[in-house]
Image (cartoon, rainbow, N blue to C red; front, side, top):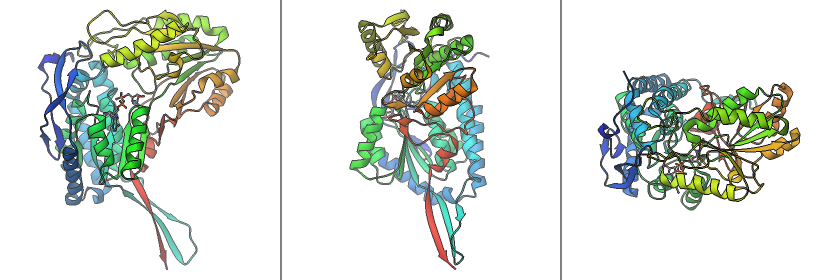
Length: 487
Ligand code: NAD
């Protein structure tokens, strides 16, 4: 059986998932397939009224089902049934994911579906294991910290890996006893809608999971500002994260978790296994054509090994199969949209005009759709836009250093601090780097998240506030109440 599919024969759920059904909405935002630029659907935009309907549905579902006070084991079991259904419906979910996003179908099914189910199971297992505390007080008192869900959590996700971003938000919010109203990116709404339908089929009470479609300024801002949304969890660009903070400041103060952009370095020391480092770096930037928040786009190499590293990188980056996301043979993604492709072109072209040497790539591919060639830029001016700005495309820059301090100084970005990679066979040097580099995640002799969902992810500096994944994500979906009883 092949998992390739015909993009013209996919039935799309087009509406908002509220309670236990699709509520239709007028088609508004035109959607083009990234693989061939063909227009295939229009995404509705939920008005404030529709958002209000979703939030009220979530509130009444919490009240009528008692979801927050279910025996935690029962909540965990419902989430496990949901994960089972996600796996069982993996090919359909994968098709919905790959049609609109840049994810090749083979990766959607084998990685995104699998990881989403795993994340939900991971958080399900926390439901009956993480709770409050009894704390030391003087003998005449009993002090307790109660841990309680917020109520209705609002979540907003980006287009780059839609399914697993939904898993990051839904898993901990639900396991912790909340209901959720989630807005996926207007470019990639379909797999998230189907996730919500599967939640109801798994026995999660209708109304606990709601998905509304729409853009940021209308639908996203309405979720954030809604008085009954008790907490906001956002993943997307730093600019949109700032807009969300403004909305919160001008509507109603509430907690917010922000997973934002990055400009992550990969530092290669002279002792590193160069072939392995080049393979890791190439895979990390080829994945999703560099459209990952943690893309390690800034390669910073010891001057003595820069030349052989560049040769190994050039070779490793030439092995990829660009093709439509619905072809099971494709492993290299298109860029999500013409707009994003133009942004990559603008940054690369300006960097080359500013003196950068284009070692490979540097232009869009001559084929249908929004494909950009894997690109390496070297000899960049210190103020090159390719070093400063998040490109969100398959572009590596190469800088060199002469000593460790210079390596660390180059690795720090003035505003971003999401992740970093370090390649060395010197254990002490690896540990020094892990302590010194300012980023929320450091990978040594590898690059990219593993499937150990216990490790939280989140940024330093303007890359974010708070964490997704790990116990931290579960805890951030509950609030603490201190109780002091005089005996
Ligand atoms: P984006 O910020 O344009 O959009 C993300 C989501 O926010 C979308 O659903 C969008 O509709 C919504 N949105 C936009 N403006 C809004 C507003 N004013 N109020 C409320 N919602 C609003 O990001 P994108 O282009 O979809 O995704 C790419 C970005 O996401 C990159 O910057 C990437 O680094 C970041 N990202 C970060 C992580 C992480 O874990 N840190 C993970 C994935 C992606």
